Image (cartoon, rainbow, N blue to C red; front, side, top):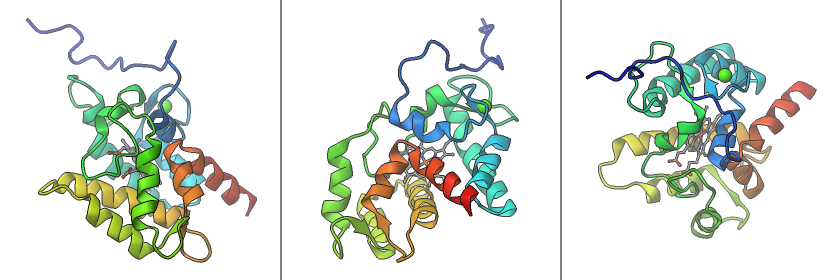
Length: 193
Ligand code: HEM
Ligand SMILES: [Ca+2]
């Protein structure tokens, strides 16, 4: 017997919800109207607020929603509106990552420290682009091509958005991506220009 909710459009709204996990905070910047569901138009707007161009923002929205929407819809039919359900974002965690989010989307301090212990060779508190590439290579699980591609996008986007004027990624910046505060900082910096 078909479940009456199997194709429902009524996705979870974050109401009466536990405190947001760091991974949920990471994505909430993109939920412009704060209703717990991120639509591609919201991701587009969020990228624009951070100063990205029209084409890049559209490309990012299409890529992210095409890739992640179905993973957060838990048994519901894929939706042509490509919504991402924030409270299910932990199901979008992929392999070949740093492990600094655990499977529930909580922040794992030791794994975060490991990134810098292993890869920050030039300076203990920052990463150069070559060190980011090294990190990606080291984190690769054999044949996990989906994970490799996703980790590549995560870290290259972070480097692109977060690098400072000396073209390096500071530990503070990387920390700030894990709770999403980096996106607000970048928005403010962009607005003040
Ligand atoms: C410019 C925007 C973004 C940047 C720079 C960024 C960057 C990152 C970084 C660096 C990680 C950590 C990966 C690791 O620990 O190896 C991450 C994880 C993640 N991000 Fe983003 N992200 C962005 C936007 C988004 C958006 C819009 C979504 C979805 C709505 C999203 C969903 C995720 C998920 C599900 C993870 C967990 C992946 C994992 O650790 O396996 N991100 N992101
Ligand atoms: Ca929304």
